[in-house]
Length: 247
Image 1 (cartoon, rainbow, N blue to C red):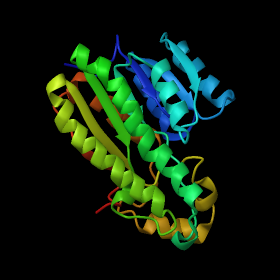
Image 2: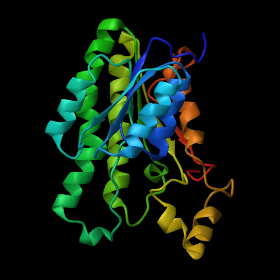
Image 3: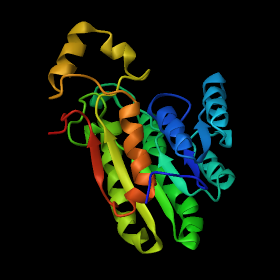
């Protein structure tokens, strides 16, 4: 057994930037061909695909708005036959819970939960036929320590983990592992603005036993492990990578 992913094809949702981009590149380093997904066309996604190709791997960019179930199904159809599915894309809207609108709730739950279900339903079928597959959902430390202004985001991540754990039991007999990796505070473009406030930044770091933010590469290595043969006996788990913040 080893960490090699040669001969495998992966789809990483939300992989034009942040944690998703690090995961896509790490899977390519392992030998996988990788589909880069983004919600809107742009240079960032093209750049990640170019980096993957520079490693000698195949890559393409697929644009799909995962807040729209029909577009999610189209993504599944275009990515048919992948061996590895990484559910990284998510949406978070910060505001007091009393002010959450129905449309904001629907957008977040469609992206964070429903898209995971729809992609799993369709992309797991070929995995079952091959008797091999890897599904990794990217959760959040907010499943344990919810942010007061991200009620729908944290709740949807809890629901996604429930989905993972249910399907892990049902798909294990088919050689498919299903796990969640739950990052803590990772310094990406999503939270640069919030963490630029010194007072808020100190409050956040004080809440992390390790005393510092993580980097997106801290997540990618664990995802590669779960997708490799070394991860074949790990399924139904929710692995926190958070410097101890969930404790």
